[in-house]
Image (cartoon, rainbow, N blue to C red; front, side, top):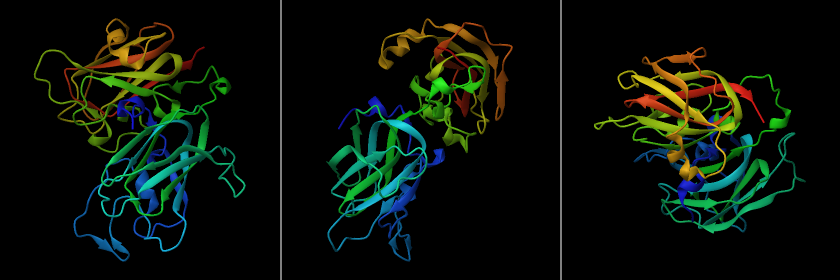
Length: 330
């Protein structure tokens, strides 16, 4: 087990919203294996049954009556380097697997065949019912597919595989404008003042938010000051266009926002909050409106290449997405 804060700040590479899907499963009689890739927390539906038995929000195989074990092969929506895994057995009590393991392979030109080489990235670990199991992974190789094994059978609510998208930045056109704050481009939300209603990493998700829950929203501030979130860009770059989207936030959007930024050298993610106090102003304070995209270009200060930003919202509230478009730099 490990501290969840260590790797859960990285994107969930197995998120169905990124296009991740189960392409093969030995058995999912009771519950579709793709349910374990959903971004929402697993739910319990009391008294709900289908033709095969109790409806469960996750992947559940039949009780095995012969030797062997069950497995599911996941094609990741984006290739990536795995930093840690969360195997969640929420609501599975008398039907969870006693253990599980994870293998991976790199097959960029298509799905792996029978001759594919699989590498064990997480040896078999013990599982408990109705629990999260957090395991860090120290491996810098990128993977495109995962094989999730449960021994011998049972149900898992969610499989979350946190890591960094694998991008060949050397092949990027230096004149191309790229969203350097996109999670698919390796950006990460590192810290925030508060995330009572919505998770800070949501603002880096692809597409526009599906509802208020798919954004970052703070509690109502009852003390002086303002709320903020710090984001590490996927690659150093010079920002030319910024989008702050308050989609779905109507009676709870921030009154205004500003952005500070810096080219950070050295230090750790844990120390970033203190460093951000002294960062330069990339975007001066701008008025926000409810339920709309706000695009800024002429308002941006030229401060050169940056690696990190701090979005300040005044005094509190919620935003759906943050986009920072620019050109990559060395």
